[in-house]
Image (cartoon, rainbow, N blue to C red; front, side, top):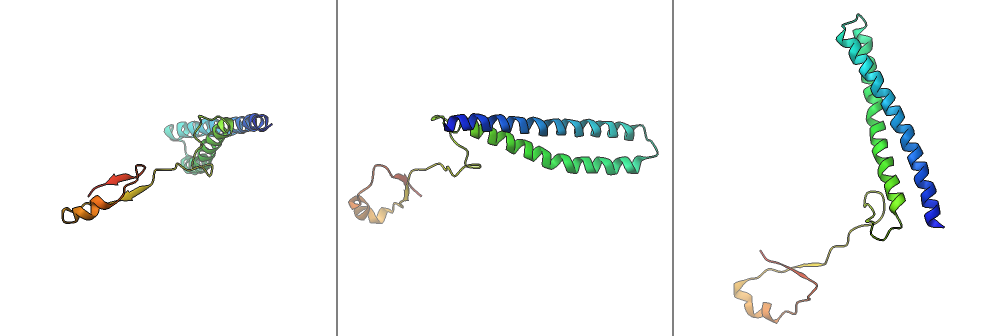
Length: 127
């Protein structure tokens, strides 16, 4: 049941990604056209510059949204695969590192150190 829902969600993310990508391509084409107008040095140079700035201001968040939608779509698609490591950015999943117990070896305290019981799972850090 959940895998079916994920495949449906994946399709929705792909549709959204395609819409965003189409809009980005459209804005990039408009940007190229305006840049070509600037090269021809038309009298409307100031208006074209303003339009270029507006297009850039639209493109920046759209590119971020595109990246996020793509990454989330991949996460949703692979969520139930055992071998897939779910991203820490989009899930509550975090990598569990082994417990590190810092220990400092002092030559003058060799007797005390030798008496300490070390856990095989602990990593030893020396300074």
